[in-house]
Every structure is written in structure tokens, then in C-alpha cells.
Length: 186
Image 1 (cartoon, helix red, strand yellow):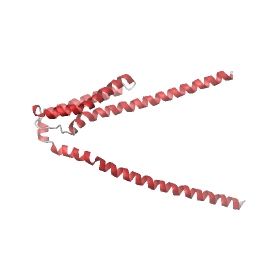
Image 2 (tube, rainbow, N blue to C red):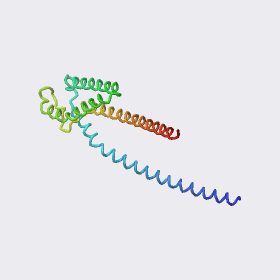
Image 3 (cartoon, rainbow, N blue to C red):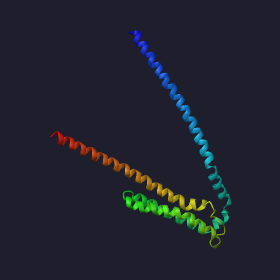
Image 4 (cartoon, rainbow, N blue to C red):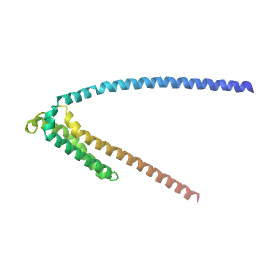
């Protein structure tokens, strides 16, 4: 009996070692994969970071501080974003209103390129410096960024609502099946 127990323990020990070895190999592969992804992400964001730093250095901040329109535009966008955030949170149970709000925010992001082009062509009439670069960094940071955040909020809310609806639907289906099974037994 002791030999059978010792033999069984050795089989279990070998199985544990095989599993441990496989897990270590898997961990090494995953660590290498994360290292590659991290390196690629860092190199992939380099052009965006360079563009942002170039924009930051290109702005004449003394002119920015003396101009009123940049402050007005940032203040307007801040107030509009705050209003949209509040509307998004208040209307989280009203799917139709959120659909309209997301369509408006998508429209604002879609029109940002055209607005940037128009303002880039006419900047001399209202500014001392052209902030509207062809890549659209200024308009993206000031206008499109907050609108996209609002759209992401609406999307997350819609997904949560859909998950809750699926749970309710499945519960109703299970109750219906239980009722049918009870009726068959009677």
C-alpha cells in the first residue's frame, strides 16, 4: 500500500512540475509580448508627441495671453462640454436623447476639419498668430477632444444599458421556461 501511495505521489509531483514549467514558459512568452507591445506603442506615439511639442513651442504665449479670442473659445468649449457632460449624466436612462446627443457630438467632430480649414484661411481677421495648423492639433485639443470624451461616455452608458437589458431578458426567459415546466407537470 505504501508503494502505491509513493508511486501516486511521484506521478502527481511530475504533473505539478510539468504544469509549473508550462506556466513559467507561458509567463515568459507573455512578458516578451508585453515588452514588444510597449515598445511599439512608445514608438507609435512619438509623432503625436513631437507634433504636440512643436505646437507648444510654436505658440507665442505673450500674444496668446493678450488675445481675448483664445480665452473666449476655451471658455465657450469648457462651458459647452460641461453642459454636454451634465446632459449625458442626467439623460442616461433616455436612450433616444442620448442618440441625438451622440449624433450632435459626432457632427461636431466631423465638422472640426472644415472649421479648422476655414479658420486657418481667415485667422488674420481675428488673431495675431495662426493656431490652425494643417494637422488640426489646436482644433482637436480644444474642440474634438471633449466631444469625443462625451461620445465615449454615451457609448459606455449604452453598453451598460444593453447588458442590463440582456440580463432582464434572460431572467424573463428563465421564468417563462419554469412556468411552462410547472404547467406540464400539473
